[in-house]
Image (cartoon, rainbow over all chains, first blue to last red; front, side, top):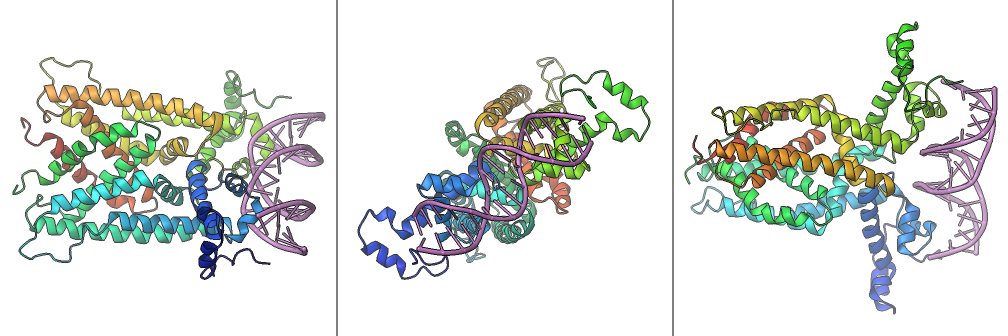
Length: 233
Length: 233
DNA sequence: CCTACCGATCGGTAGG
DNA sequence: CCTACCGATCGGTAGG
């Protein structure tokens, strides 16, 4: 008697659960969504091994075995959350860096575009604090098959992002908006900058993040100053 | 029949074990030192909950209960390692920033001192990769009493370091070696820079760290450029 | 340093 | 969605 389809075929159930009575957040799909949220939170709080399925079930108000109506295993649950986090990051880092129309007459605006890009990243980190934590777990705490599968995903995303950055900075350099540095170096510098920002945000969870947020604009200006010093403008 | 003193009174045993026969690295004190090394490695690899005492014992070639001749508990072991890591960091970050003799005629050399400071940090991170990982665990993965005890230590160290940085940058500003920025902002900027560097190093474990190391000098110059642009020199 | 053992909890399954 | 239960492993103790 399937209360829910196995975790791969959940197409038509969705509509039914929405038509059925009860609070909209408590349907079949609702429980699964809540599980994903609770699991991300717990992984972020305790690490991979430290996050137990029993605790997740408890926070959801159900029994542990019932979780297996929504997931295949703890490992699969983590991988799914990691994929969600990486996709959310991809969306947040957005198309601001897009260098499709380069070389044209309007090549400018790289500073503003990078600033917008930064805003997207920091907003994402504010709104989805667990996503960042999951990525950190994934690079440092896993072992065996799980480590390998997570590693592939992280590496692919990293390579892709770095390539986009290099294109962006190469374009900015051609436009004379930054110094004549190696675009690869500028990309590395940017990665260092935002990794530093995100690490600090991780540290200052619990109130002091405001201070950092206040200073973000100034930190950004200091960063850009390094890139642009002695450039055309 | 005490093979070793309980983990607090280990004064005279040390000499005896050195006088006794056998390989010098296998004495009573030797096992304890090896345990600390193995434990740091395992905590760094798997996280706090994921690092089991049985695995530590296995790597040492002894049985799990024997560990309790050297430690009081898993929690106490972690706290000790965290203290070691923080102390090692303190030593590595060294006295280069010391602003004891400021205002005198020789106020200069801030750039070189900060560069030396950076070298100390990066060398430390290279030689003690687990120490950084332990600090990260401590801020993100613990719970209960352990979280609280670790939090106190980390906060104290952080506050102390930040204060030293602010003094340093205030001195550099008076000397006209950097722009007229708020010293607190410059300290924040520095923290962001090295957190970014250390995060990247964490990511690139396994070979590609070389690339980063090659670029370190250039990244440093880019950073300093931001601080010094439009300053006296 | 060891063997033997503890209760608690782990991820996961059977079966309804 | 549940109860009942699995073998494995957890941190830790007793006792020599």
